[in-house]
Length: 125
Image (cartoon, rainbow, N blue to C red; front, side):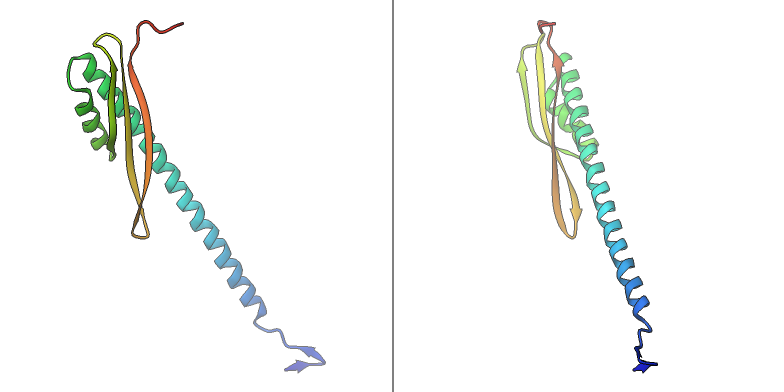
């Protein structure tokens, strides 16, 4: 249809606004997902740090370092993948690797983290 020799463009602004809203909504959704993923990664790194510290404390008290690390990680929503104690009762380092899952669209996305804690008295200054 034409009006005075010009093509009728009624409704084209509605289409453009609809497309713009969809684009903005898509970008916002991606930003929210990125924020959730970053927060999950930070939480897992914190859980690894706390698990390593719990293991180091247990080792210093002559208890099972890895059991303490597992208990701490579990309490923080993570699981211990590996735990290793290097050294003796005086000088030791507890190394803990943990992971936690973020479930998106029915699939688990794993976030790993690693931390060390311990007592090293002969470290170079």
